[in-house]
Image (tube, rainbow, N blue to C red; front, side):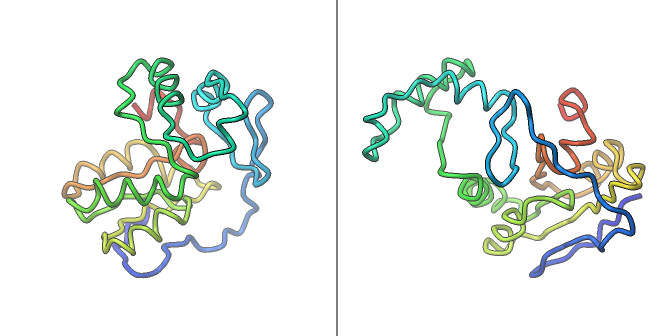
Length: 175
């Protein structure tokens, strides 16, 4: 069973493992950032499908054309799409809009530290689920579902394709 100690006001970081962790690998058919951060394949396709004229990069326009292109690719209404300049701002927005009502965040650790920062800024309780990639049995979909079902209403941060959830669970398991 995973360690699920409730904590606040500090980073719920795992202890340094005795064994080296897996190294992040670059995608051969996706977009790789300098940091080694990977875009999800669906996001890569959307970015490639949205053709933006170079002159639109020179100003700060309302991205109506980009919204419409992304909505068409995703098969949804463009008013349901919100572009942010990076995941940090998106995480802050999600936590301010959704998690403020429940005041609880369930998060697999290790994960992007922005979730913890924004949760602390918004005074949201953090329920970390620690993951040791050398002992994958400590973190499985059954453990995650059990915690979700036995915890009062919460927001659950599922990172994909990175973090334990993206590495260990395929899309079908997550859905």
